[in-house]
Image 1: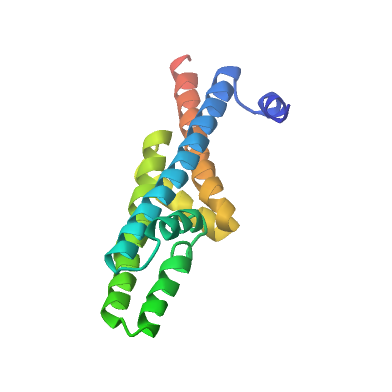
Image 2 (image 1 turned 90 degrees about the vertical axis):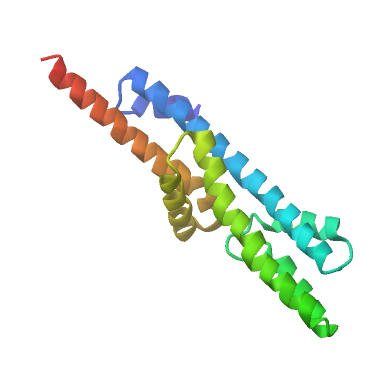
Length: 174
């Protein structure tokens, strides 16, 4: 019902309007896929680090990291930082440093590298546009910005491309 209303008020010809909504669906699916796959990859990387330092239950804590990976900025650190602090408390300084380094250099980088790649590939969008959308979305809307940022930026670019195409065809037809 809402989509039909939006199609009716869209200031584009029917063909471009339909293409806009197809594009919106593609991008939204790519964003959801990117967030989920990246969270699973972060959980796996976190579980490996957990196992390397010898902490118990790496599968459980890896799953917990995958779940927390959906929280912007803090995310997986809500799991691996307490793990490292526990190791420091238990006088396992080397393992604590290793877990901190693993969390910063491996687990956090998985998010920074994979999420934009998965989103850009599935949504057929340039990687830089997705990156700008994720950062801007997080700044503007918090966790909802993970989804809204890339969607809004990508659809804006699509509208600009549609406008350019219509403008060129207007002058060619004259």
